Length: 140
Image (cartoon, rainbow, N blue to C red; front, side, top):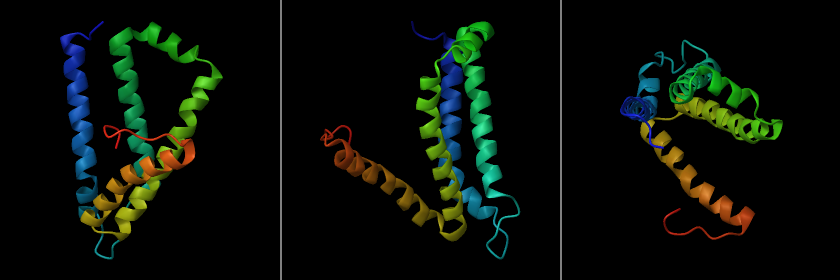
């Protein structure tokens, strides 16, 4: 079942907004630095706020697609194993975002972007080392 035009429009807008925010992260964080190179705000609070906004937007999208009660039941009746399967990567993702913010404090935006893009390569290499499965050209 394909989404309605309104839901599809919301998905496109949210995706575009997220991509824009991610692209501007390094630049905007550099512009928000004080003269001495520090930030006037808490870096972990920035990450926590960003994750909370993403959670709210995800809930809104789920409610728009399924309705409030169906969405609530789908989330609340999920087994603990499914919650844990998402909790562990999300904690690692949060740690990664905190480290990205810390890197932004000590690096210029260009160097930070090169470092961030190297994660793609290192993820592929670690996948190959851990799982001993070759990645096809499309996955690289």
